[in-house]
Length: 55
Length: 442
Image (cartoon, rainbow over all chains, first blue to last red; front, side):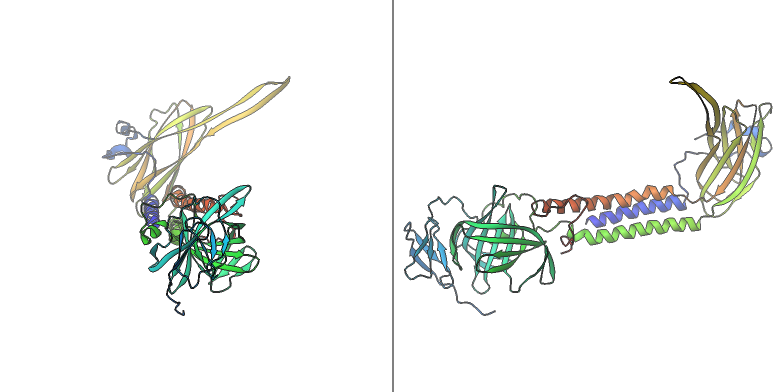
């Protein structure tokens, strides 16, 4: 019984590992923003109004 | 096996106390101890000579009464004799019970009990081989557990040999749980017997004893380890999981793109009217994966810069905002230590920073960079790497595989450690099994 629990725990850990590796998960808190205006490349300063930040 | 004669009941009056002594297996009984006074009579003597009179009180009652019939391992037995053997170790007496059982066809068997742990024992039909602290019998390897001189201190019922209180034998016990191999050496003979651990509940049920078995003390020498069954599947599971993890990590290292997709250097001056800048457009190809942004600052002098950054998808307008910091401080420290002046140059170099962004899908991207600093002039070198292999997940997951198996091993060895505590050969520490380690693989 205990080896089955261990196998389940280990498999979940492995799946987590694969998700971390292949989906690129990290613990970095990068803030996701949407609909950035397409004019930013012409006027970089305009993005300051959209910038939310994050560490 | 040649059938034995059916038991012949016979009784006589004890010459010591006058009590009625019943012989349940008169044909084979050599000596019998009166169940009322404990005096021993020669049952083979026509005159029933009194061999040994017992002056003490009968204080020790067997849990299985003389004459009680029951079933052990599917076979019917009758309890016909009971004795206590005692060893003295460092001035302390340790006693265990032995119950002599009789089966009309299979002959004699023993039930031995110490500390609530029971063994079902029979005489060996072959001669075990001994070598050092090991013994071999029936293709099983046994390890020596203890050796002591045992004496009979209490006796009731009938026996097929000339038994006397005070009779001494040199006993050596070997174990390979759930089996116990025991050697009894007396002046006249050497008797080997093999036993198997039996749960007390099985005895209580087989002999229909009242109540429940008393609690057990410690770990019995031949008590099967609760970890014995799971030892092999646990070991296999551990190696499979570890192998899968290592293989996955290796695959990630091999399959990751780990490609630098962009680099550019931006120069900043306090006098610039606009500090926000955008990078060139670069392509992030392949599956959804991480992106590493490396920032290297130069020109900072005793100052720091806060860098607001965004990774923007040119096509969708989605952005990932983040803020990083770089700094560089240096100076000279000086003082006097025990009259000796000293000077030391120091630096705190935090000019390099890297950040890993998660799950960035493929597409065309550019960086928006907006540094804030009091420095008059400095530059930022930015690099973007795609699909960077990482060791962090490996080391995060590794404990989830190692720790449970480590705890399991520790508990298994702790069990063995406690088993061997009572032995003449205790394990030196919890981290080392005795050589041969046959205890769990029996």
